[in-house]
Amino acid sequence: MDSKRNSRRELLKAGAALAGGITLGTGSKAQAEGHDHPMTPGSENASPMIHGSKEQIEYGQRSKYVTSVRVQHPIGGRPSPDVFGKVFHVATPLQDSVGVITPSSLHYIATTRGSFLPDIDPRQHTLTIHGLVDRPLTLTMDELKRFPSVTRLHFIECAGNRHNGKQKNVQDTHGMTSCSEWTGVLLSTLLKECGLKGSAKWFVAEGAEEVKGASSIPIEKGMDDCIIAYGMNGEPLRPQQGFPVRIMVPGFEGIYHTKFLRRIKVVDRFYMNYNEFGHLRPEDKELALGEQIGPKSVITYPSGTQQLPGPGFYEISGLAWSGGGAVKTVEVSTDGGKKWNRAEFKNTPQRMAHVRFAYPWKWDGTETAIMSRCTDEVGQRQALREEIANWWKVPFERDYRVPGLDNSVMPWKIARDGSVTNGLA
Amino acid sequence: MGSLNLLRIVTIPLLLLGSLPGSTAFAQSPTYGVGRTPTAEEIRRMDISIGPTGEELPPGRGSVKEGAQVYVQKGCVGCHGAAGVGGLAPILQSKRGADVPVWKKERILPLRAPNATIVWDFINRGMPLGLEGTLTPDEVYSLTAYLLFINNVIPEDQVLDKQSLPKVRMPIGDEFGKPHQFKLNAPRLEGYPY
Image (cartoon, rainbow over all chains, first blue to last red; front, top):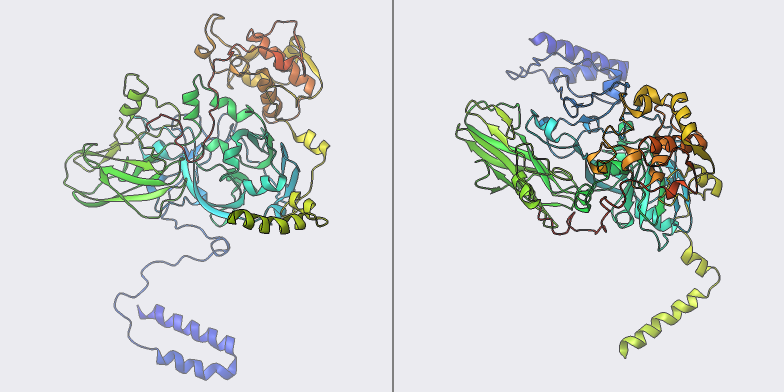
């Protein structure tokens, strides 16, 4: 066991001699010998070494023992790549998440239609703002970065993020939401620069991809907190997230966050352009529930398909978020919803961002169901599916579909053997 | 009284400042002055967002008959099937009877869209798959006419152009949810307890 140590020291000596040249030779030898002492028991390096590759040094990669990946969403739905060979929806592995930042590599992806990613050269890409403004404006990406910037934590969630009794784990039930730190210029900064006309009521945000996906967004929202984002988690946006620039519409359904943003057109009425057709509903009420995300939370540990080794202490952990603002409180029930207990926050709740909550729990080994619910700063509370059905005055059935975005409570069943399964099954 | 005096003291220097050469222009000019003004032609070329009144529509025209030909020539049949049924892509012609209300029919764009301009916009920016943006305005007008015809929205002899397209009466009528007045820092739906 000493041989490894000794050879390392020999290498160090050789290195020092080479670096310092002849004059330093004797001195470094004496220093090395001065540090010669018996090894602390157990300090030997028992693991094989990872041979540093160019990739690991230049950009880095995770441990080969960490294997969590995005998967197709929904399971059994349209495959990705689909029959046209195109990428569609993939979900974030929330069951393995810690903290609130989703690694950029694991951020969920949804496209307006199964599509290849546009390969956009940022030097060629421009953003144009026109319509009901005094001065239309075209910006290169370099010019955009000259404006005062903001950096904010925000989640995005796809309208398809619905949970039902058929899904197995939290990636299937809730994986179409992710949270990142976004950097960019407030849209209000740019609209003021253009001089917004009084008749402006909506704006259309349009992408540069093959279908030029476009959404209509209220101008009040645009002047409040929308971000023309070029940065994500400390680096440029990933192509799958709209490189080189996207719009963040904090708290609104995912499809509003137009990727590959090329154009903002300020208009005086609602424009039903491409992405909006999917929002068409018979009723005003249901339409409204498909715009801003409601208060929502889910327990990520323990969650479906995970296994508790036995009775004892567990820190129940999960994520909570709301499109209405910051999450104010999260409650956890460990007895199937009879008693609700206040959870603690692991980070400071921020507006339209995931917050990590936790609740200390001693499992006694009996069968139970655990679940969470949250309330946001505007007073909205996450409801049970039964409560939502009652409000709409429709009979509650097992496969009840929540109108608008599904933000209902998600229960996980824990069996006596410690196995965790979908509580809606 | 005191505050009025204060107001006078403050406003007089401001008025003086306002009359200085260039200062009025400064008040209206952009704060940062970064970027350039796009030309009207640049904007016209990229402005493919068609509003309900169709003012952004380009010149051109198309008939149902021409649309049926374009539908075959451009390979629409390959994904959507002959006459809009039987393909892998979403169907484009309802399989349900004419007496069935729109909301009880399939989610078909040329049937359910509140304005015919939406059908035009959708085809123009989104089709054909892999060759988006290659259709001429005439081809888009004619495809729109054909798809509206096979869904019994317009008669076989109707020709669509910038004037007639926005006037097409869609079967959905007024029977669809309208966007609410968005309010900041408010629940997503007034009166919704959750």
